[in-house]
Amino acid sequence: MSSSTPHPSAVGTNTQPKLSTEAPTQPTSESLTDDGQLPPQRHAGAAGLGPAYGQGAGLGEKLGGMQEEIKGKLTKNPELVEHGRERRTGILKKKEQQQNDEANPFAKPEDHGKA
Image (cartoon, rainbow, N blue to C red; front, side, top):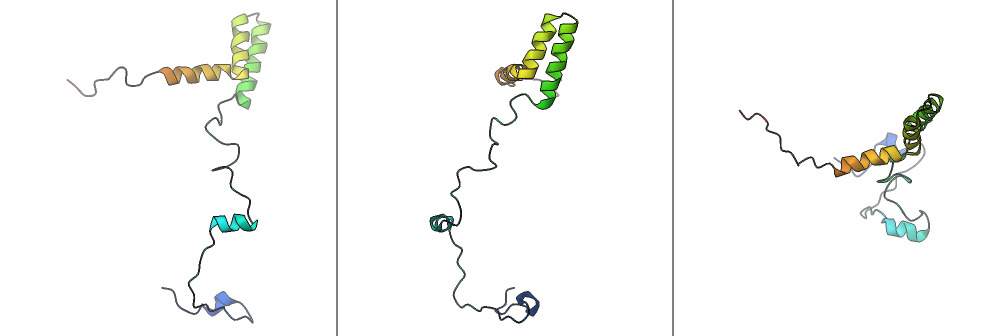
């Protein structure tokens, strides 16, 4: 549904559209980077995001771990202090991730709908 001449409102005031008989060509990314117009692409997506994104302790975990540590020190409970330290530093999250990775979901087949 393309026509050879553009609509008058698409051209602007006091201008004439460029009419070209040759086919439009898109510049390749290599030609743009060779000219120095664009920097070379060094990553595939947003910088800083990858497979290890979000694996450390977040702000909520750090605050919750600090709260557990203080509560454990006030109640003189060394297990709670250690649990809070592990939560605050992200060790607890790594341990849980390792347990999830080691668990085999196909080890025990379940009987679905068998009588």
